[in-house]
Image (cartoon, rainbow, N blue to C red):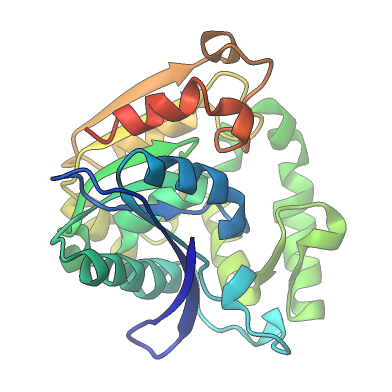
Length: 285
């Protein structure tokens, strides 16, 4: 693993990690897109395993999170919104990986909210995405969340975010055990999307729908039967909002993978290495 930095079009320096094994000829590089408030270090074991299979793999932290929050800088000073993460941070990550490998396109394996970044970036970046493997992702409308998270959604979206974010200048989710610490612009936009029945493309259709309609990369989506946050209905709604991106959806159970639990955050844990990880890698073909 090699730690690197790259710079976005608006001059923000972000943290990334490169994982390189013996490259398989013709294998496209892989960019890993993180879930909301999940740092790239969580994906390190999977990224190294995938690199050992013969691919160049890169993970990164969006601005305001993990290694992309400089020491001494408070998350309350981070500017931007969800589209900044997609159109600046994700776009620069794609270009960085292309430049490093000499490839014109990358494959993307993205977790939860990270699967929305290719859909919400600008068409030139979308054209650099050869394929998306979408893991535990879907429409974020709270009534489509799975039951455990759906019960807490009103407290999060209607009380905690609107009350605490202006008070602290960011969302102090870590101390609440809710999502994580997030910049004000990002959490406010995300919470607004989650309160709308059609999520982002319903809340801000003039901004989001044209981008999602422009996306034409193929998607292999994986949903988990025991996901406590993202239901298969939410995944279906997300795929339906990308009408020109051909997609398939597989509903995976823990029993099929020979484990007791997968859940929303479990797909990239090492206990999934023997069964689920090879399945995700096979979807890159």
